Image 1 (cartoon, rainbow, N blue to C red):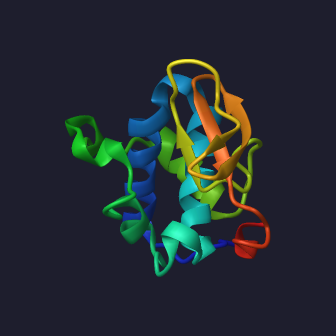
Image 2 (cartoon, helix red, strand yellow):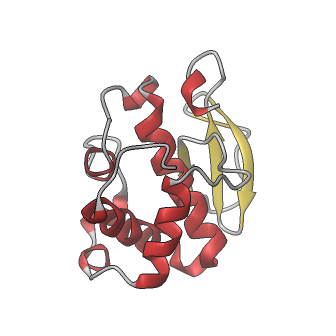
Length: 140
């Protein structure tokens, strides 16, 4: 059962985002990006109030994903990434992105905090950041 509302257009859109943001980090890295996206839709907190759909999450401005500004994002979704997108839509979570709302790729070590949010861990080149449970209980 899905944890957020979706249709096949949403699966395709999320699949394109996963690939564009983290293809170089393999399936697990793409799944973690998917966790962040799904958490933003579920969250209704902090920077993500009223982000109730995959489309609004992907194209949120300001505060959205840099990948939407690059041509690679606009290539068609592949079946591999669609299957990954479906997994996170159905609620599969992957640490350290399980409860994260943000990620970024620093030049060095992950800062302990980023925009006042605590680091929940690193996977390959991306650092993940989660809100407190009191600030955003719906992602926990």
